[in-house]
Image (tube, rainbow, N blue to C red):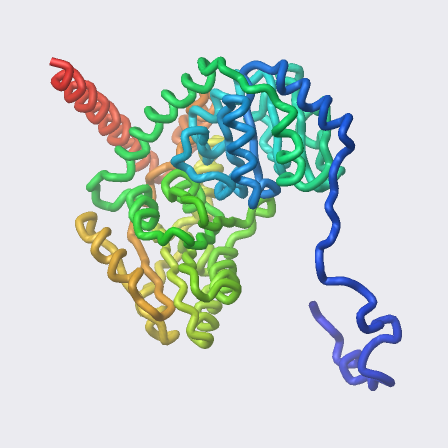
Length: 439
């Protein structure tokens, strides 16, 4: 906000405006919004009659995780999470299918494509192509804001109010379901997906795969950790490989998709919760934009840990240019910054991870620091954040970008080929081991 100098120099007759009356307004949220009972009963009837029920939760369901799971158990319905709702329920819960969308899981996409009934709780998920087709599912939406009801999908019943209160009132109106076929099929698919994620996050390639860094960060998190994620390809790795347990907090810029948010979010989290572990998981592009804030963390002795996925590239822009527009990359590379020296020059600590066999030991050592710390991880700049299901259109656009002159087409093609071969060999090894155990 810019205030002209002539306004700054004007003299005030009093300290505040005459409209600023002390104790005139409240800073406490006192409203308890609930729909009427008849509307709750109508929603319950839809759910009781429903088949192939899926629950989609967002940030409006944070704090209502127990209620979400109680509803899921009553309906035997899998739970799909928008990214800002990642911390609603733990990632390893038996009802969780993980995230939805470009950064999500294949089982969650399949569940949405097969859903006949959808319960949306505290979410205005914007990527319509990942929601059921219009007319495919009967939908009930719960949201504290009336204007969000039906914004993304035709809704049969909208319940305006607090998610926790509404779910608690809805639960006794629901019949216990016993058909587990749909839920079981998605649980089996989730086990297969998790095996694939495990394979990707335990590779020993050099340069280091970014999935490996995210997984090791996940392993180092305390039970009440607060994870702040920036926007970029780092968001993909965090969404899929940082596992949220009960009691953790997770946030990202969300719909605004503003790069640079990770570091200031982590600072704010550490100030608000000084006793908790505060982690920023960022890319070097985003950190470059607000790097000066690290000096703020040093000034106030905030022991945040900043993990930098370093590839000297605006990665998400690169892959969007290629995979969605069919164009060769343009203007996405930038000069490298020595983040260790930067951290030390600010008065903090700095660590660099360059070797695959050093990832765990260095990360563990860095996480024990009691000073603001930057951990820069040199990763494979050509590892693509692939969608959960690769559609033909994506492949065509990638091929078109190669034809139009993508400068790193050979490197990218080789990376994709090696990733595919690695997955095939791992798949064969897993089946071979399983067959041996059976024998």
